[in-house]
Length: 234
Ligand SMILES: Nc1ncnc2c1ncn2[C@@H]1O[C@H](COP(=O)(O)OP(=O)(O)OP(=O)(O)O)[C@@H](O)[C@H]1O
Ligand SMILES: [Mg+2]
Image 1 (cartoon, rainbow, N blue to C red):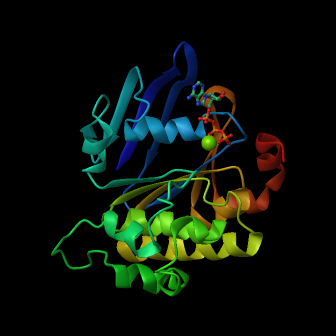
Image 2 (image 1 turned 180 degrees about the vertical axis):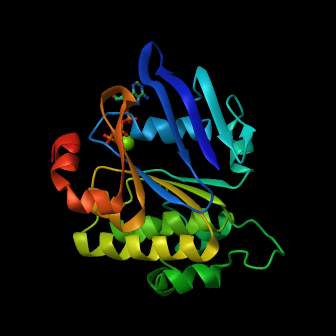
């Protein structure tokens, strides 16, 4: 469903992603684990076309999309939830959600009510301004807003950032549940391997300059946490 083949991405002359290859099967949940600055966000931006790779191949649903503008890639059903969340501060929760609504008659299309079912706190705070929300509520709103576009693929950048451990566990559980129920393919990037474990079944370990140092299952991480700690230096 997502396949990167040997991509190279730059910021100016800075060669940040060097020959990265990875894939995510349809309906799977996969994480990229790596410490600060290895290129996790840039990987998601490369897939989305926000920082297009200069070389290599990017496939979404088998289509070669490298060089496509971001809105066209989004049009394939790819939703990107950036770490900064980008909530509109002057709009209420409900207005933020409505703005992203992709009207669809398809059965199973996302509606406000459905989003509130998964995230009841958003329903309770539907009239609150976007920035009056706590960090956790803002994260839920950013995810809820992504869902309103009826995505088949979701790219999540460090959903644990700024959240308490309890809230992180809750968000992780809700997201992995709704992805399973709706058959959404999930690629998330994280530094926190406990969150990645809760949300994904397979994990790429990313080192400096986006070098993939290994690929492990959740079961392997649980068995050998030292391996992860060495990679992430946590
Ligand atoms: N807009 C930019 N211009 C120039 N260099 C950038 C830019 N954004 C990121 N970089 C550099 O590219 C490298 C990869 O950054 P990226 O944001 O992808 O890392 P990351 O793994 O997401 O890190 P973090 O965990 O801190 O979010 C870093 O060395 C970073 O300094
Ligand atoms: Mg990042």
